Each structure stands twice: as C-alpha cells, then as structure tokens.
Length: 311
Image (tube, rainbow, N blue to C red; front, side, top):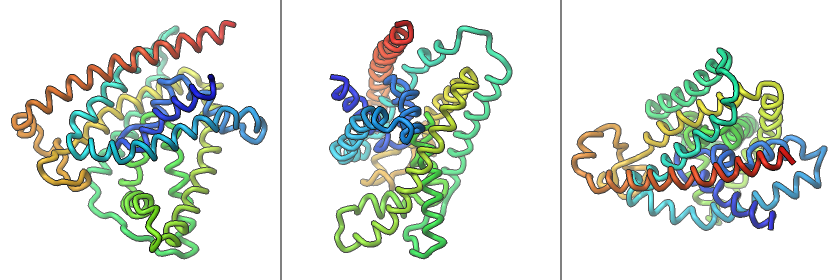
C-alpha cells in the first residue's frame, strides 16, 4: 500500500518536470515526502536498503508522469497556458499556509526574515535573467572542457530538483543551455540519427545531476537540523517567488502554434486580458480549484506527519 502511495506521489512530483516554472521540491513538500526524500538521497550509501525502498517507487512515479503526461501537458499549454498555469499557481498558493504553520510556533526572528528575503530575491533575479536573455546555445561541441561544463550544469540543475520553488527550466534558460539540452537532446531522445550525440550530452549531465542531488540534499538536510525555522522561511521565499516565475511563463496562444514561440502575456498584459476575457475567467476558476486541491492534500499530509511524530 505504501509502495503504491509513493508511486502516486512521485507521479504528481513528476509533473514539475513538465510544467514551466514549477518545482518538484514544492510538490514534494505539499505531499509530505520532502524531508524524507532529502534524508534518503543524502544517506543512500549509509542506509542503502531503506533509502532505495523509499526512493524506488517515488522515482517510478516520476518517470511514469514524465513519459505519460509530457505530450498531454505540452498540448494543453500550447492551447491555453493561462488556464493551465493558473491552476498550478492556485496549487502553490493553497499550500503556503500549512508550511507557514509548521514554523509559526515562535516569534519571527531577523535571521528568518533574511532567509526569506534572500531566497525570494534569488528567484526574482532568475526571472530577470531569463526575460533579459537573448542568446541561446543550440549545439554543444563534445570535447573535454565542454564535458566538464555539462557536468557542472547538471550539478546546478540538480539543485533546482530539490530546492522548492526553484525551476530547473528557468535556470537552464538563464544559463543559455535550455535549447541545447532540453529541446534538442531530451526532445529528440529517440532520434536514432543523433543517438550518439544525445548520449554524449546526457551522460555527463546525468552524472552531474546525480552527484549534485546527493551533495545538495545532504546540505539541505543539515540546514533543517541546525536551522529548521530559517530553512523553512527560505523555502517560503522560494515558493512565493515561484508564483511570479510561473506567471511570467504564461504566453498568448494566438501569437504562435508552439509554446516556445508564443509571446509572453506580461509584454501586453492589459491587451491580452481585454481580448481573452473567457481565458482569464477560466484561469481564475482553475486557480481556485488548484488552491482547494492543495489545501486539502497538504493539510491531510501535515496532520499525518504530526501523528507519526507523536507516536
């Protein structure tokens, strides 16, 4: 039963790998598996059997989600990203209060406020960097230095997998490698003609991501043990700023067929609202639905965690 439950939770976390601006870490918190996920990854060599027992069904769920839903969400986002992404904005907002309640037992200190401000600012800087970036790399020449570079990018991307509110797609866009790695390699994974090149890019990227996940998960777990309140306030900063990041991903489907080519609505926000009133209303309804969905899930999971701690 627990194995199946973890597959389902992994399935929902996997959606973050598909939706622009959404963080898997955020969904992991809302589903009540975040701290255990960090512990299992960070201690995989010390507690191998126990860690694998937890991680295996979770990663099966993530893989199933990416394989089964990638095309569906791609079609939905191309059709109307306002409605789809507003649903996920609602999801994120719905889980903020239960997280805040976890650390609201004492007065807020200055270190917690600083943690919140710094994490919030990091996401805003990522947004600014992304919207201001004009150059993108399409192809990576395979040599020793570039292999090391791809490995380092994989490590950087791995941090976004475990830090709630931080989007891996946004980071790769800022670095200029989103097209080269996601669009041209992952998007053409089954293209036999480019199979060797895909492996040459994905292997160092995947190894970098694996090393990064193990290192960063251990670091964050230590932060939880020593600076529990400050760490959760930093997470709140990441999560709240990610709402802005997702909003900046919303695009006008009337400007192009493919999502990547569509013009972001923030460039002509009031014109878009005036011309797409039904989409805006649909987005509001979707956000409300997302809000109550997460509110119900996160409350249930946090109560369950508290019950386990008291046993």
